[in-house]
Length: 400
Ligand SMILES: Cc1ncc(COP(=O)(O)O)c(C=O)c1O
Image (cartoon, rainbow, N blue to C red; front, top):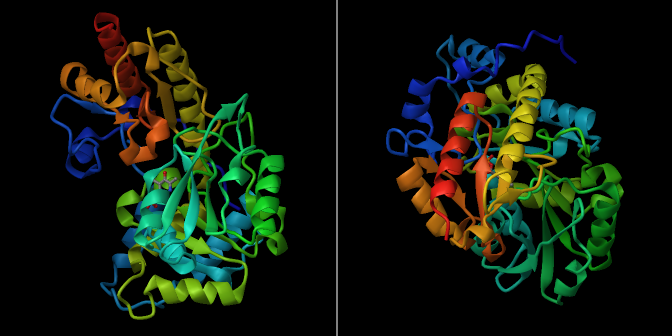
């Protein structure tokens, strides 16, 4: 698809532009924390994007035109999305059934609004990213939490059927899983799809993390099990995690049946121009998919080194431990032995160790995250090392 390029320089300590981050990186990150605090918080890279993305935006703006664009997205962007997902993830995506939209988060809200009525139930893993719960609540529906345990090297799905009631309409799947950092094996996706089809349930399939996967277990999309079996699977993909363009608010959702896609469009508010994704975000999105895969691959190489280094460090510290993530750039750290609550530990680390992390509170992940903190490692080796030094020093002097 594209020519490989030299990548050694992309993810060095020097590549992190602290001045830009301090001015531009919000959402619990550099622009929001006091000077001197290291934020290993929101999942957003500390590195500048691939130069092809900057070039594509620069080329697009040169003639000074920012007219209205097709309401349902630029056809060439829809094609890029389908080509990318089909090539790298074997997903059987038809470009006509792709809707570019202004974030993966928006895609989740549109899916929930399309398929849930007030009083319906949606099964949501606990813990998982709060957007599943929030999008369900916004549709007036009821989140039913599935207590999510890890058994060996996989998420245990054996009890999920017990949470289905006559009111259940949807199962929310986060693959790979944030914050557990796990990839679902094919057999488990097959079992989940069988269960959903048996009970005629929708699946909200969020694959925003599907590029950030390490060698041990390759990513399998539930869609690769066949379009005919995924009639009621509605999927979301995004650009914030893999390509670092969170501020451009770009994402997409896609279905496998024209009739169902029509329902999504009706709920997306794109026909009235009240909603939708900007031209620049689509141009950037295309540059991500068509030209920047080499950058993602180099990023994963860098992240693998950070992951292995960080895991080893954390597991040698008193009172804390973490599993090696199979995917994502997130450590989900068990802090139960420290005796502190997630919130207290996060607050004290921020105030006393000058390290900001995400507490495992119900607000961010559900009650099942109690006793954990989440640490993001999509930064340079030097910043990660300094952050972990601060964590270790603080833990060494603050035992309960
Ligand atoms: C699982 C999951 N879904 C969706 C999102 C939202 O992504 P976006 O920035 O495209 O709205 C995130 C961001 O953290 C996420 O982790």
